[in-house]
Image (cartoon, rainbow, N blue to C red; front, top):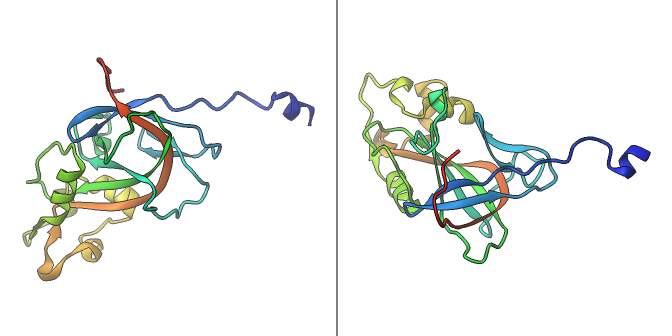
Length: 196
């Protein structure tokens, strides 16, 4: 009890370092804020911020802004290539106001999709476009297959059935809620800033 009163229970939780995201192709600085849950919203080795709540089934809310994790992408690279990704936001604030952000997984299903998507508009356009997989189509043909297995539990071609459109086509890019939200600021980047 004395330790808790004096704050001797352990080191203070360190905030996640700011990182660069894209907004309409331009670099924006995204600065996650501590929420007190001590539970990270993460993708492989990357921490996107501390979750807003301890519940893993948070649904997206209209009042929140969007943080898209686009897999694969060239902005952030890991030695385990399945985690290579771009980060895209739909808005940023010029006043530095802290906002809540819903996280969405954006998973490339079509190898023919351009390599680097950097704006919400490009993401939404790709999600509305479809392609028809060939008869020999396997999960290895999906650029985001490893993350799809990890985050959506899709480990077989049959597991794609829920995402198919009429006639058997699939979206070129699948956008699904991660059911994670963080609190952060996002503002225009001034001067050089290197991706971490």
